[in-house]
Length: 187
Image (cartoon, rainbow, N blue to C red; front, side, top):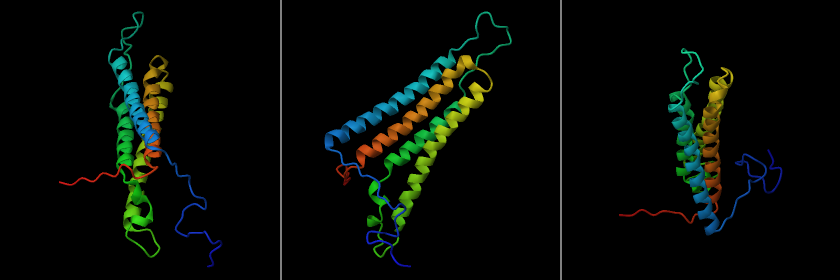
C-alpha cells in the first residue's frame, strides 16, 4: 500500500487536523472560572427544582386523591452520571492523548494513549448518557403523563445536565492551550 500523500499519517483518525486553541493565561483563568460558574449554576437549577418539588402541594380545589408530583431518585441519576463524566474528563491528563508520550516510538499508539482515549470516551459517554437520561425523564415522567404543572422539574434537570456538558467543554478548551498548569507534587 502506498502512502497517498506526503503528510498522511496512518495513525490518524481524521484526514484533517482539529483546531488547537491557543489562549493566553488571562483567557485560560477566565475560562476556568466561567466553567466553575456554569457548573455551580447547573447544580443551582437542580437544587431549585428539588426544593420546589419538596414543597409542592395539590391545588385547593383538587379532589382528595390528587397527589402532587415530586422529584425522586430517578431524577437525580442523570445528574450523577453527568457529574462523574465531568470529573473523569477534567481529571484526565491531556498530554497522554497523543502517542508522543505513550512510550511507543516505532509507530503505533502506545498503551498510555490508548488508556487515555478509553478514559476520555467513558467520561464523554457518561455526560452524554446523563443528558439523554434527563431528556428521557422529562419526556416519560412529565410530558407523556401530562403533568404539565410540574414540567419545570424536568426542564431544570435537562438544563442542569446541559450546563455540566457546556462547563466541561469550556474547561477543556481553556486548559488545552498549553501545559502551564503542570503540577509537580514533591514531598
